[in-house]
Amino acid sequence: MKNFFTVLGGMGTLATESFVRILDQRTKTQKDQDYLDYIVVNHATVPDRTSYIVDHSQPSFLPALKEDVEQQSLLKPAFMIMICNTAHYLYDEIQAATDIPIINMPHLAISTMKKQHPNAKKIGLIATKGTLYDHIYEDEIKDAGFNVSLGDQAVQDEVESLIYDDIKVAGAVNKEKYHHILQTMHDKFDCDVIVLGCTELSLAQEKASDHDFEVIDAQSIIADKSIELGMKLRRGEEIDFSKIY
View 1 (cartoon, one colour):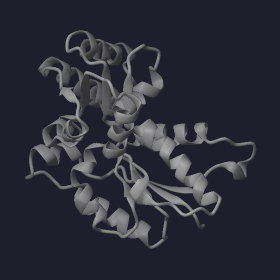
View 2 (cartoon, one colour):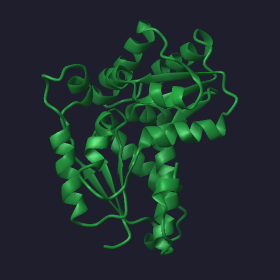
View 3 (cartoon, one colour):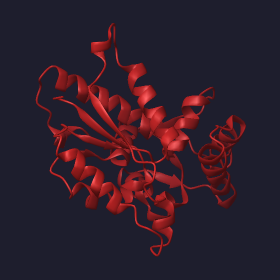
């Protein structure tokens, strides 16, 4: 297979399934051959990203992802995407393992947000404890020139419960909990745009999008970008990866 891309997934598996489902649904097709060419690496046993970020005595996820990148590089994909926001804590180290471009999902999401909501007054961020701890999204949002709110401990606890108790453990989206989180960030913390900084939250958005809040869904954005780049590969066009953000 030529002119394909690689999806580094499995973090978690349901979120990766959500990404692939969105990718295929949004691709304009009339026959089997119209779908994009890609490889999905569902590496479910990658150590928990948040556990390592908040406590470096826990197993690092870097060796597993470096191995994935090195293995996939032998197949020569045009680019790779990593379907886990928290794993971008070690983005530079993971990218250093290959000459093949790995699209930076948080950077793409916030650069897209800046274009779509240039006049936003306050950006809310909901994410895993690891993503909040390492400031992946917070720094991107501030660098883009926006004020950011992380809510309070009650919101963060509710987000963690939605991600881990409901989605990762029970395998289900708690629609009421997800909507309550968005409502709280909007009403209590005056956030006019809310960034979903975790792919499990992207799954929640896919399953419970019947709300009126403005959200920036990084997984949805990178799915659209993957389709755009995948179609360029199909047409034999050169891609300037320095200009994709």
